[in-house]
Amino acid sequence: MKKLVMLLTVLTIIAVVVAGCTPKAAEPATTKVVYLINGSLGDNAFYDSGQLGMDKIKSQYGVEIRTIECGYDAAQYEPSIEAAVGYADVIFVISYGFEDLVKEYADKYPEKIFVNLDTVVQNTKNTITSVDYIEEESAFLAGVVAGMLTLDTSIPNVNADKVIGAVGGDQDPVIDAFMFAYENGAKFIDPEIVMERKYLGDWVDTAKGKQATLQLYDTGSDIVFQIAAAAGMGVLQASGERNLYSIGVDTNQNALVPGHVVASDTKDIGLAITNIYATIKDGTYKPGQVLNYGLATKGVDVVFEGNGNVLPQAIVDKVNELRQQIIDGTLKVEIYKP
Amino acid sequence: MNIITGLINGMITSATPILLAALGGSLTYYAGIFNIAMEGMMLSGAFFGMLGSYYFHSWPMGILFAILGAILMALIFILFAVVLKMDEFITGIGLNLFSVGVTTYMLRQIFKVKGAFASPEIVPIPKIDIPWIKDIPVVGEIISGQNLIVYIALLATIVVSYLVFKTRFGLRLRAAGYNRTSLDTSGVSANRIRVWSLILCGVLCGLAGSFLSLGYVTLFSEGMSAGRGWISLAAVILVSGNPTGIALISLLFGFTDGLGLFMQRSLPSQFTSMVPYVATLVALFVYSVRLKKKQKI
Image (cartoon, rainbow over all chains, first blue to last red; front, side, top):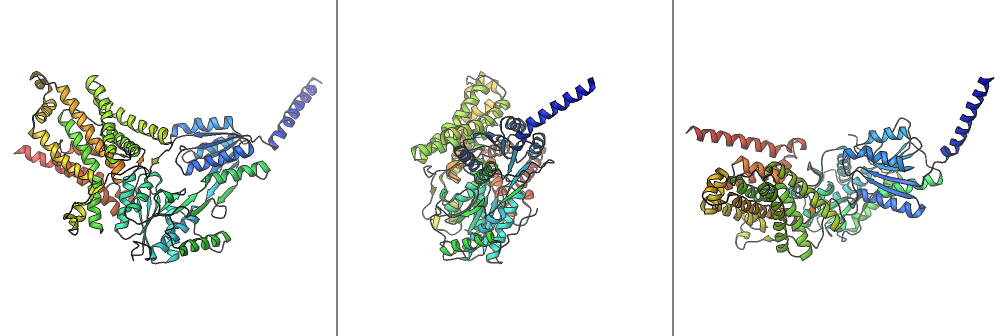
């Protein structure tokens, strides 16, 4: 008898606890959102664009937001993610360098929504949603711009050589994906075009970025694509000094050296944040997905605004035409495989 | 411009900041100070140079601010290493780290940007066209049309060389390093000579900094000295402070820097990044062999 009472009590407790938990699990709280980044805000590009997305969901849905910056300091990764899960229901994370920690914490806190931006991170419980940017699509269009520009000798100072250049910060899979698609884009216009690449081995040395660019110009390039973060400012300034051309990256850098930065290959982090938060709100969000952000979703793009109208309309038209073909799926851009 | 003149011009521009900072380092080397703070002085000079040029819309103010910014760092060095007699090595390391921190902090506070700051308001230091010479093919492209600081660096090499070996100040400078007690007993304060050598080092590093942020590129980015101060230290030690030797070594560094980038056409970039450092080791070896031969005679 005693045992039966005991059993019943235990069962009741379990029933109450489960019943108490079930509604919570079905509809998780989503009012506190954290933006957790490995770097720091204020870069006017990558991280700041994510912050814009955060500000937007704050004003639109009235959620509490908080941004946690690790400032590229590996020692900050663990305490930051600990703070993030302690506070937030939804965590948007840029996790270069601490992917494993994100996996571990997502497994430990399956009720929290983890959205990993810019890379694909999958945990064993498959609760992380990843946003994968298809850099190849926009870099391909950047290559089209460069290829058409170097062929068009009616543009001031463009020489007859079919050579284009690119300056990367260092040799890594993301940079090589950019270079790969950029070269393909140029060769799509004319297979004879040669792409010369330089790696700086540095992301901040603007002087070295400029020196590499001047060398590319000396060996016949008319246009140089910068994929070197802050060091790339040297690339853009070199194009101004030589009266030649360059292509910016991550954000619209056209106005930095007007008339010389002819286009920019952009990546919109904030867009993914607002889109995904909208799906969380309307209940269509599914954990564990990999969302591809390419030209079709405007996650990446090539923009011309603010370039001082130096490009002939034919190039702009061609880029618009190819962009549409890529979105429609009639033109397939090859994806880089390291 | 063809690739050869391009490489030579690249060599000159890469060598200029290293040369100026190394000349500063040479003065402190002769004064017997183990000064590793050129990196920090240069970075501070680059930041304040940009600041001066931005606020006053004039490049001479930029240069002046760059020099003051670097002297500020030199004064901190003097306070700890000369006045308080702290370890020079620790002071130097502290100063280099402090310089990175303080310039980054001020960049973020004043301009609300992180990473790099560029603006059309920053007036660059002009390039100088020399009449007659600039019309000579090839040679004109190299000798004329360089940045003002490049010519200043050339002049500074001669001035420092003269200062160290031909003046009374130079004699005292070398005495301060060689045997400071005898200098003190002769009635000249060795500490005073050391203070002056550090201030002059600040001036030269300030010029190097202004070349970085106002000469070659017109912007400031965090940590933009990017190890040039350390390379200049290597140059000083490599030739035991001799200004002419420093000029040659700086040119060698500048050349290998550009050569490394150029060789990426046929070699993997990880390999070409080693070029400047391999050249350093080779130079060190050649120098030590020559020294040994001299000693035998």
